[in-house]
Image (tube, rainbow, N blue to C red; front, side, top):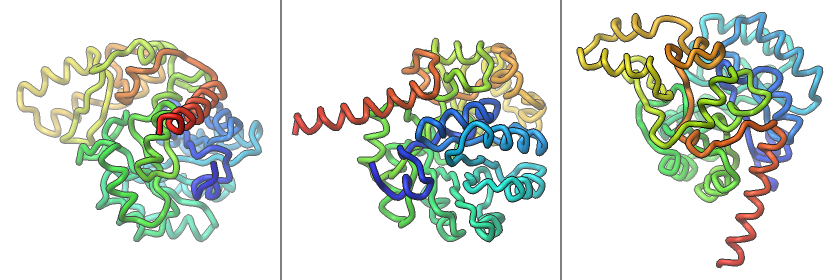
Length: 314
């Protein structure tokens, strides 16, 4: 494999391990990078000093490229960006905000910038902001989603035909066949989240990992669209949320019910009843907890095997 994403990040395979809250610490990011893909630290669940510590630890265990995912609505955004520069991080993925605010500033320090979008409209805005690539994420993805509810299969050809910078597909991808399908639709790389939640190196609680591998089709739902749409696993918290919706709640009612640190409670602390369990639809096909290197090998092997099978068929 050799394309613009591989060259942009200087990686062996055009795969990005998503920078997920409460999952993507230095152990996961470094293991991903050492496996030939791009590892990302997820800063969205970290205080600034915690992020700095994770960056430093990542540097100690990998000499391969890695990056940091930064939600642009982060309350300490200036401090986070200063840490990125001070620690000489050279790849930043931005999400949940306007890329115009920080892209040009980051690029002054020769930092590669990638922005996550959920629609063609926002993809074009990211291009205008000067990003180097975009992640086009379908609403199959776990966690926070766009309001358009466009699937990955619909979004990737729509975006890739109309922008000139590289497109990274995300949402519903966890296998080599999924990677190949995304490439066929026009992507030059993929971002994978849910599959790496169930890696040994993920910082998610063991109870959450086990819940993911035991999940079935239909166990995730997109909800809280009045706030920020989020795909999560059904549990007691979700059932209580459904009951609340039957009373026509206001945004304030929903925010009050959600409270603070629900995602930490569920994914990091392992409270499967009251926590927010963010995971993608593809969780239904994940059946094992494996080291990152084994996950990457499985994906790459299946990708190559599928290409060979298709050649024989056609």
